[in-house]
Amino acid sequence: MPSSCQETGSTQFLLFKIALRSLDLVTAKRCLDKVCNGPNKDIAILYSCALEAQSMGNKDIILKVLSQLLEQADTTTPPEGANLPAIYRTMIRLILSDIQENKTVESGILDTLYSIFQKALNNAVKSKTASEAAADGTLKSMWSTDEYDWFSRNSYNLALRALQHWPPQYALHFSQLCVQFIKLYPSESCSEEELENLNLRRSFCDYICASTCIVLARGHEKMEDQVCKKTSLL
Image (cartoon, rainbow, N blue to C red; front, side):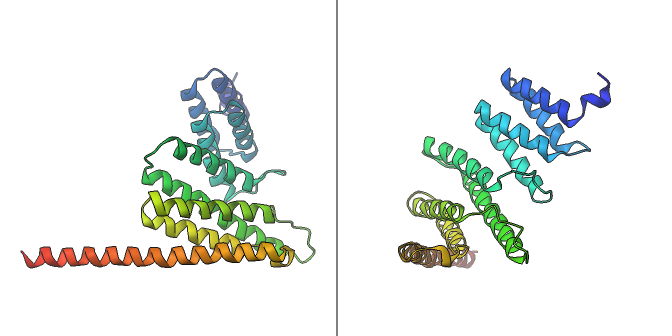
């Protein structure tokens, strides 16, 4: 096979597929890097890599593929039938499974988790805005009310978990995310009971935000006091 053909996205996908099934993760990651960084980036091939990685069930490879996929999806139109909310949910579930398996959670993992939620929120807002701007109604948002509900509920649950186990800023981050997803709900399609539950969830989030800000402010004041005391001793 000519060297030019060896570097094409389709060839790298075939090599990626073989490497995954042979459990050669080093080669699989190398092929994935070539697909992502090649001169002719094809997001459809990247989607194929994501599906193949999911079928094999390797968490590290799945997260790597999906991360690259979302990075390119920010600037490239996804292939027809691609479901970005489902990709965000898959990544979040994979990270949460690691968090549940490990008692100690590094801040880097929490930052990654928050980043995915934030990207999902940005995409949801962008999709809704584009859908509402289409006068003929032909552009339909891929974000349904069920998607808003999934992300708002899970960010709320993470805010509650953060109150008990993680640094306070994460309780603030995830509660703010929950409120932003709730704002996207189409109120006209919600029942009175659903609206009541949403308002209650939002009220809890507002309380978490307020109380967390107080905690962070007090910590900042204590730090300033300590700096002043140390400075006076010099």
